[in-house]
Each structure stands twice: as structure tokens, then as C-alpha cells.
Length: 366
Image 1 (cartoon, rainbow, N blue to C red):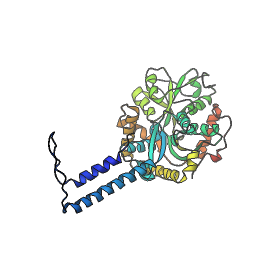
Image 2 (cartoon, rainbow, N blue to C red; image 1 turned 90 degrees about the horizontal axis):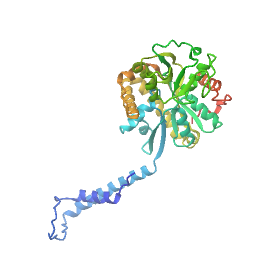
Image 3 (tube, rainbow, N blue to C red; image 1 turned 30 degrees about the vertical axis):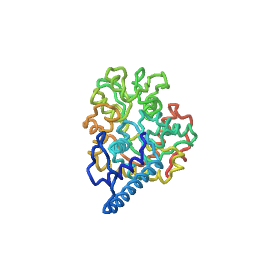
Image 4 (cartoon, rainbow, N blue to C red; image 1 turned 135 degrees about the vertical axis):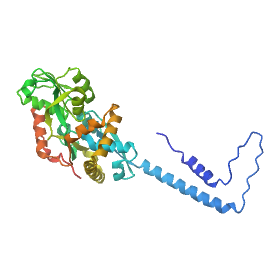
């Protein structure tokens, strides 16, 4: 990062403020007369120096604020189910930061992008980020692995927007029909991966992390579309906008619409929550306010989401695609305890959680 030479800025301010005559170009050999200070110039120069001193004090105060700024690092994914993060991130790009305005000038917000939940939770464990929008399964897994010490869910975000898509001419209808089939999910252990494995298991299939009666293949969201088009896989369990892309661009059809599932929650590092309680309260309030703004301004929100997805994926995302996906997501700051318990049971049934964790400390509202 470039540093600022405040001494040079001060001299520039003095020169710019004191200048009463046009600047003359001095050629080689010119004789320069000694400066003459007229009495009538003294008040003007005094005013100039006062202005310059004020400018310097302002610059120094801004530098002090920047040096002492608290940095909040937030993770999210390039998915419509992370709509609050997409809108806020895009506003940050424009210098109109939603969180920045509500957290104060002394707080700097940095955004980090992940493909799926397990990667984001690894970043939480490594203290690389302070908060992240994430699915409930990775959050539960991280909570259990750390014996309840590392993560806290501080707010809900989105329900729905996830689905199982099959080929247009597919005759697959029930979990049992998927014997010997290949199903792609965003990442091993993410919310859709767990949902897919639990659904297949409910049909009597034996599903292992590798192998079993059907193959569940962790495949990054952007890579799912080409392999689905090539028919290298039979189905995909994923989230918006990838669900709509598989429908509109690869002629897929929805077999299971996971409309009631908790898709996204807002999670914080436990230590960050404990050390920055007033700040976390502001973050929760800003998140809730943003959620309501998106509900009340869907057209503007969709534009911001589209712009951010294009910036993050470097792909062409049409406005029609966003509009097609939009009705499938439900924004909320609440967390359904019943649905979360169902996520726990699903994770247990496919081996990601050995025992049902005590959820008493999972929810952290300062």
C-alpha cells in the first residue's frame, strides 16, 4: 500500500494557498531577485498559513483514523442464496458500503469469496475471516469439531433456493432410482452435499464419501454446467443461480425443490463475537436492515446482485436469469430451530456428525 507524504502535502497546501501571482518558468541563466514581502501581504500570508495548518491537521486526523481502523472480514459465496452479501459487496465496490456506513468511519470492511461452506469454515478456524454467510451444515460441522468453541450463528439469511436437477429426458423419480448414478454437489460436506446424501440414503441406497450405490461427486458450481451438458453426470444438487442456469442453459428439470431448507445463515468467530460485542450488534442490525431493504427494493437488489455475480464469476449473467431464480429464495433473519434440527439429523445419517451436538452455545447474539 502506498504511503502518504504529509510533509509534501503541507508544503503543497502552503504554496497553493499563498500563490498570488502566476508561476514563472525559470530558464537557465536567469537571475532571481530576492523575495520582497510587502506589508499588505502579511495578513494574507497569515490567513494562508492558517488554512494550510488546518488542512494538515485534517490530513493527520484522517491518517490516524485509518491507522486505528478496525477491519471486519466477511466471507460469502457467488450464489443468489447469499443475496445480502452480494448486494453489500457490490455497494462496497462502488464506495457506497452498506455496512461501512452503519458501522462507522473507524471500521473497514473486507470481503472474501469462497466456493462453498467447508472452505469458509476453514478460514474461520484459521482466523482469516471474522464472519461469513454459509450453509447450516458446514456451520454445524465446524461447531461440533471445535466442541462448540469456534463458531456462533448470529442471524438467519435465506431459506430455499436449492434443488436437485436432472436431465430433461430423465426417468429418475425416487431416491432408489439413482442406484449406479452420478450426482454432483458443490463441495464435500456443504449443505447441498449433505442434503443429497441424506435424500439418497432415504431410498435405501448406501452412500459413502467415495463409492457406494450411487456416486456423489463434489464439483464446484461453475464446473457443474459443462459436465451436465456433456451428460457426464446424471443430476446436480445445488443452489441459485446455478439451479436456473442448469434449467435454462442445459435443459435440466427440477426433481426436488428444497424450498423450506435453511440455505444460508450468518456466522461469526466466537472470539470475534466476545471481543467486539458492540460492533457485532451493529453488524446484526445492519444485516437485518439490509434484508428488509432487499425485500422492499427487489428490482434494484437484482441489479446489484447481477453486477456482483458478473464481477465475481467473470461470466455473463443475464437479468432474466436473476429474475427467474428470485422467487425461489425467501429472505429472513430468523432461524428455524426445527429445520436446523433436521439438518443435524441429515448430517448424522450420512456420517458427517457422529453425535447430535449440544446446540445450547451455537446461537450467539451479543
